Image (cartoon, rainbow, N blue to C red):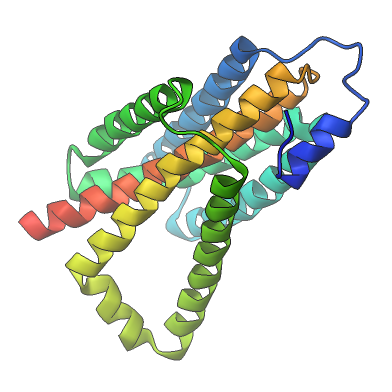
Length: 248
């Protein structure tokens, strides 16, 4: 089973997993659940410490920025170095939990009920996409991968440009952000994109398991799933918050 993704092409060529314990779907599932639990626990811990006054507002902002940087570095290392995937996946989950906890607490405080709705919606999207993939309703082809990675690259470029415009022309960016219809369309499109990215994660899992890769690659798949799930959850939080604000 060949993959056009250079990371997974390397996996197919890597001799490190020959003769070792092979990856399984059960192992990938357990590792993904572990990362989710660590992220949730990290988020609750930080919010509890902040609410009890153990973390002041100034240091909390520094902690938030630091956790985002650590999470980015961790996911890059874990994705490209299977031997280091386990520790850096754990570091990523703990760091990302700080961001998730912060966002969830803020939005839930403003619009009660939004957080649990986002959690249920994220789980539903995951289940639906897994069914569509396993039933081969959605097939991951080389063309599909190219389209998805091109879209991802385009989104990253637009995000960078948006950040630049926020410095050059803050009023223009503010007008876009305050326009509820535009914000809903953009956020909804990002939720759909995240859902489609799940099929690529499922394809990676199948490639690794069916290819007989080492169990250490389970962590590579798990952190990939974790990143996509976090993406979907954050975008759903934003989408639901915009809807709630418009109702109010």
